[in-house]
Length: 41
Image (cartoon, rainbow, N blue to C red; front, side, top):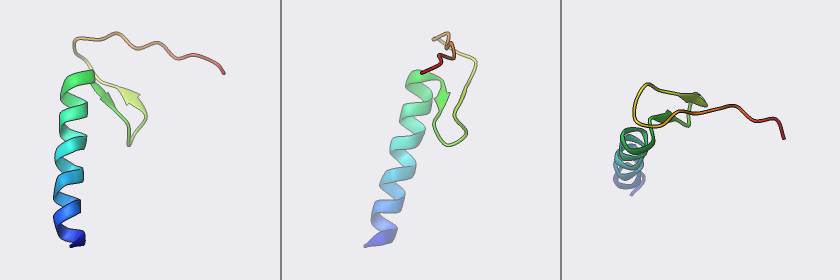
């Protein structure tokens, strides 16, 4: 069961990265469609 959800999680992460050009695991923007700016809380 964990293997099934692990595959789905990898697919969702890949889709997010492709859509928003941002890597949430590394917390870094990637080159692409959007321009990301760091904001202080």
